[in-house]
Length: 327
Image (tube, rainbow, N blue to C red):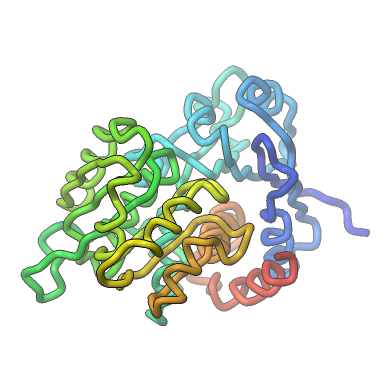
């Protein structure tokens, strides 16, 4: 057995269900990184400080899930546009050569958000749209701005996002890049519509000139059926009543693309409603895959320059196969 010199892990609470170790370890194998290992640790908000101070220089990076995507913020430096704009990071990379910019004896910790591009790439893949294989372009992609949207049409596309938590804010940002940046209006549907509304409105305006409104979840059935893109960020089974309401409503069937971030169960009730009516439904395993691909790239690009290797060609298929076998 190889000695482990480089350690990474996913943190969260609960964490036993996480498939991140499956994905990351498959990538390490494909890259020939025999002395790398990726694990999971159950860490809550009150445990994070102690966990970070217990690490040694063999630690390269962390993936962060609920409830730590905001808790990590005081410890690190937001280092891509999405982490900066959203105040949410799912990726932390340690720089042990820079203790000056660390907190309380910790090294500098660079914070990134790969959820946004994970959503964009999941949609691109489902539409068979080729994605850039340039590592730097994928990692640092930014919205192209309102001036380029509409794709030759005067009618902007409409997106509906179910939920308004941290992942929903990443979905808002993703809408500024998805569907060739043609989305001009977003409706956020949630049980508590005012939560994060100012943040979502600001994201849409700053990143892409997109207008944002917020309504109650049970009022969004008609809008979801007519939307060009629906992204559900609700937890497993939380969207089931909404799915049944969409199925039972009179009028045209759903016509747009659905991305449900849930991957267990698969398919969800929401996905069944879309696919049974001939619309495209994308499961959360696609977002999970692509955000993990970008995390691997963030954590390992110190080994080679981006021009030296093609991250998608090397690790996408092995990671996809490992994920399918685990589901």
